[in-house]
Image (tube, rainbow, N blue to C red; front, top):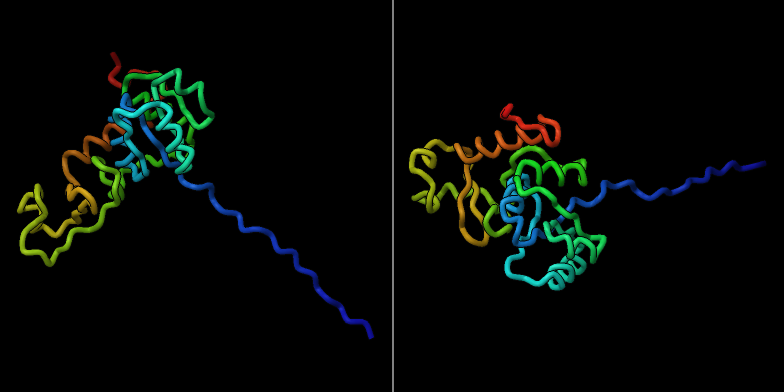
Length: 179
């Protein structure tokens, strides 16, 4: 009597590529903050040498965003950002990273890049800087685990959303104001 056996081939799991992590040099502080508002891990390297930025990028598996042409020629980990304007800088990053998120996320502190957590609602007073009326409304409030900066939905996030809408709804190089 013959026994049939089945052979199984084990294939590696297909996983999504890792989420990009960046280092922005000191010429791209606004871009770093806005990428953090999108939930990305972005180091803002101020008063650092090109060599130290490139070393950190390699050690932490990060990509460098810079306006420094010289640095961009030193490593394949570097994306040269050509524009001075935030809207176009975001478009440049989006072209290089097509899966770039386009919505505000309360995940990272825009000031120091540390993770955010929901505010402790059992506390008798709101976190520093949070208006009492907003605290009492019960709406979500997030606090930086490192520097204590508080975040909530408001006019600032509305402005960021307007910027993102403008950036991602108009073609690159277009003047969304019609000027």
